[in-house]
Length: 131
Length: 279
Image (cartoon, rainbow over all chains, first blue to last red; front, side, top):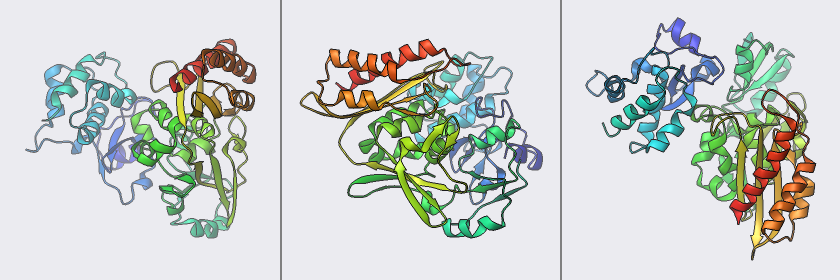
């Protein structure tokens, strides 16, 4: 599915990190739930809704609140893990708009970031709540 | 990657399809084990049969005496099920320790069992719940205690083409716990894990089931420790006694994740903590 998204659909926002479900760089939403696209077959999308990072936008069609807070907080450094982090955070906030810091930490256990040390990511997600 | 992936609409169609498929075939459900192996070049079947949509493997259903969890049920569905929380205390406690949230949206309980890993969190907990596995092969159905499904690392009693329909968990009021020791608090493969359920009446254990992960060639049902706990008071002495006993019942190995002696000791510690949490 990851290959399908990147090579056939030409949507390069979704990244391949580990290819074994450990890093979360390839995360996308299938029927509103975060999944690792490196471990799904494209045929398994039949009849389902797929949203990649390219489909995550603000209500006005511009940047999504999470994208704004990630920028404002400096939660992006090399940027490779960012699409996955935004997708995972969006899945959480859709389900639980009042997620606590602990909820956010638990939700992001499947997303590895080697640059930021996570603190700025966590505060970016906290600041995007309710927006 | 396999040359072909087929997706039967239901079990009847699956059985009809089988004779026409290459013999090198495997079932694909959540994909979190199979596709990982494929990405690593360790999977070379010619054909995958996608059973993730089979209606017979779906859903969590209550009957008078038991709870049925379909093998195609995703781990996150169990997390959201009030019936599972009510009747499966050890399994519910295990879920936050099962991989990561996104993998829980993909992985199925049936796949966790069919993969046959001794460290499978869902399976270890289900063994402690006293679950039965319901299997089907071309219309022939059988039911066996889940603990008997496992023969060795990655080896199960499943026959070629046999499908796990689901798991049947007896509906009895019991307390349960799941304690896992991994490289970090969440999202790691366990060095050792302990699942316990107990029916407790007036501070006395009336029925107990202890299961352990990653410390034997299979998800281990600790039969001796479970039997020993019967009719014991849930006291500090009982916890220490059970902890000593379980250490003699496991057979851990030293591998990349941990060392045998450490794992054995931790089984005692985890069981003591698990029993304490039930008190």
